[in-house]
Image 1 (tube, one colour):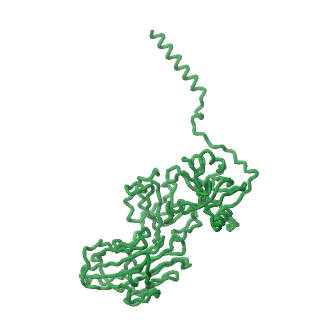
Image 2 (cartoon, one colour; image 1 turned 135 degrees about the vertical axis):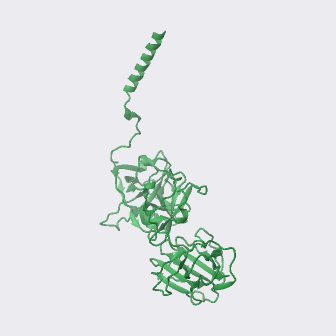
Length: 475
């Protein structure tokens, strides 16, 4: 009996050995895409610029998209990767600009919507691809140009996508466009960019990239420039493999795909992996703060008050101790009256760079001097509203060393008052929001407070803010 069992075991081992010896290891590897360059004979190459122009002509004719009927193709380079889960069923491709003739096909990008996951296995970062346009459409979706199927630019399906998107054997080195948050524009959408000397906003250093309970589908974390204080949200998917990692605490450079949020409300940056966050300096650029929190009540002694009712509408704010200074651009703080859904409160103050045509706008509205040492329990309150502030920025800042001259504004040390609430672009444009009763009692010396507006002509930074009922009081 034992001999029979032993023979059976030997026979079984021999059969398994023979079977496994006939199967090489490579038969169990993930199949690799063909290493043969696609055959494009019979197709006419066109440019990203020509494709965009065809879309714009269709829109001018009243259509929402354009469908291509000729045997044409474009050549692009993949700048997205779904390896880390931050992109889903899409490829972002951009063209390669001819430095000798940059106007022939300027730097542009498209999002290709594909009903397929794990696209990185075939279309890895930097992969050169050819997109056959016949039968495809180009339209606008979520604020960016998208290539898809039909007039609604629907997803290209799994059974057909390889007929349209041909994989080259070439992998290019992608060099991001080094730019500033204040300078990125619509033409940079769907392209790979890099912002330098930036950091996560100090209010968000305790957060993860997208792992908070409040994060629905995506998390938005504010990236701020150490050069000019402007910001852009970093958008991370709640399916990204780095979602639960705490945001980088340092400052440095960050690169990613410049885009718009899902509802096309604001600009965003999307990274492929955490290696795109290159924050290697511990020398953060956080501003000086006067942060005493909020008080429960205002004092009875009025040190400064402005309801703007004596100002002349459509004229610069003046008098009452105000310093109204235009640091850059042509727009400054002015008095205005408005009725309707976006009504003023009688006469209010307004600042905005919308349609100014200026490359940048910076405007200051500075209070007279307030002596914090000579007054106890000093507080401040005001109200703000916005008319689609977009990416423009309004701050309440202070200085202990401003000399009172317009020339000295640039050389003075300015800090921020973080406890004061200033309306956000996400707030309703038809409402006015109170700052709260801002406690200033922990400050010292003589101080000037300023409402500083920063914006530009780009869609990212156009916008308008309104200000009213400014009051500084003491006990």
